[in-house]
Length: 145
Image 1 (tube, helix red, strand yellow):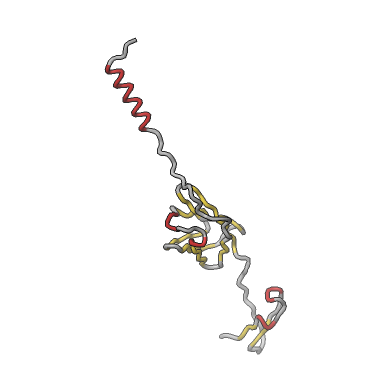
Image 2: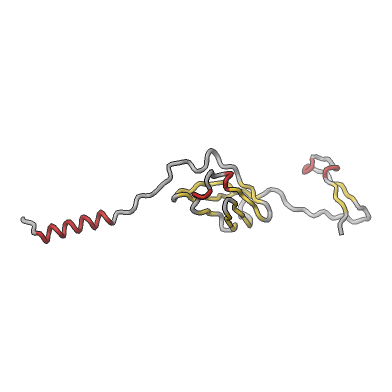
């Protein structure tokens, strides 16, 4: 069967169309972004400050940062501010570089704020326990109005 010029041009157009519609190749980074094991980020009770240079040599290459939904993340240059608490004791933070996620573990602080009250006329109270090595002189509480 003979192919006419019309059929050749139709076949050529179809080939060009299929070649042009191929998805762009993924641009993955070949160099390591985080060297070694990333140390755990321990959240404080209010705002936690994370220096991204502690984890990544060039923080400018980070495309985005994903955090658990109960945390708010605000990035300013090389600093990351984390506000909020985790619903569970440990979770993760993801640094995205060229569609690759680099995971850093995040844990809630085990320390809690406690209020000690004392009824009496004392101006100074000492507390001892496991938290200060049973040394009452390490935790001296003074009266404040």
